[in-house]
Image (tube, rainbow, N blue to C red; front, side, top):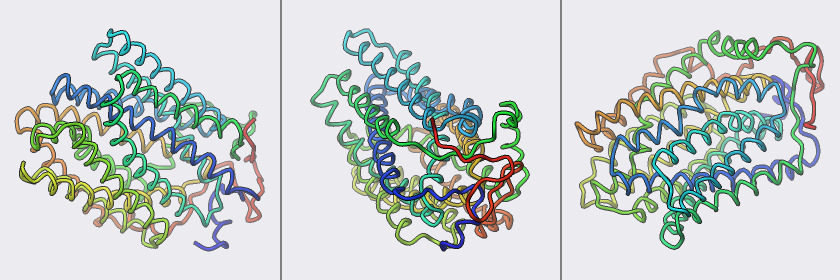
Length: 441
C-alpha cells in the first residue's frame, strides 16, 4: 500500500505528528498487560491440570474463558464504536486486575475452590469482550494507513513474545512463589498497561449524539455489513469452523504433555515458549514482507498451522523433541496467517464500524470455541487427548483449504473498502456528513 492509498481507506484519519511515540507507548503497555494475563492463564491451567488431571475440567475452564467473550462480544463491539475506546480499555483492565486480587486472597488463605477459578476466568473473559474490540479498532487510528499491515505483523509478534515470556515465567513463578503471589504479577502488568492510556488520547470517529441510533440498531448495522458482504460472510464462517475443530487442542496442551510425554510444567513452558519464538518470527516476517496476496497467505498458512497440530500429537511418547518442532512450526505459520487477516479486515471495514465487525468475529469464534470444547470432552474421554489433537488438526486444515473454493473470499485481496452509512471522509482526511473525528476526553 502506498501513501496515495491512505485516503482510500474508509474512516481513516491522519494520526498526525508524533504518532510513533503515542503508538509505541500504548503498544508497549498492552504488551506488558497481555503478557501478565497469559502468565496467569498458564498458572491457572496448570493448577487445574495438576489438581484434577481431567479433560472435562480443562474443557470447563476453556469454556469459562471463552463463552462470556462470545456472548458479550456484540455489546462490547457496539460500545467500542459508540463510546470512548480508551476508557473501555482502562475499565476492562481494572476489573481484570481486581479479579486477580480476589484469587490471590483465596489462594493465600487456602480457601480456593475450583469454581472460584472458573468464576474469575468468566469475569475476565467478560471484560475481554469490551477490551479486545476497543484495542483492535484503536490501532487503525493510531498509525498511518500504509503502516497498517506492519502494525498487524507487530501485533502478531506481540502474541509470540507474550507466549515466549508467559510459559517460562509461569513455570518459574510456580516453582519459586506461592500460587497467590505468582498471580500478583498480572496485577502489576495490568497497571503498567493502564498507565499509557492515562497519558495519551486516541482519535476516534463517532456520530454526534443527536444522530446516534440505539445500541441494538447499531449492532444490527454491524451484522448487516458483514452478512451482506459475501467475502466477509464466508471468511467469518470459515474461521468459525476452524476454531470449532482446533481450539480444544490449545486448552488440552498441558494434559497432552503430562499424559503422553510424561512432562511437567517445565516441559509445557518449553513447548509454549519455543512456539512463541516461532510466532515472533512469523509476525516479524509479515511486518517485513507485508504479503500482497493476503487472503491466499491466510488460507495456506493457517492450513499448515492446523496440520502441524495433528502431527504434534502423532509424535512418539519418547520423542518430545519432535512434538516441540511441530508445535514451533505451528506457531510460525499461525502468526504468518493471522496478521494478514487482521490487515484485510482493517482495510475493508470502515473504522467507525470496526468495533462491531471485529467483535462479531470474536463472537463467532468465541461460540465455536466452547462448542468445540464441549465436543472434545467426550471425544477425549473415548479416544484420548491424542485423538482430539489429530481429529481437530486435520479437520481444521481441510476447512482452511476449502476457502479456495470461494471466489468471493479470494476477492477480499483487492481491498476495496465498504461504504459506511452516514459517516464518510473526503480524501483530505477531515470529517464530513455526520461523522465526527474526536479525541477521547
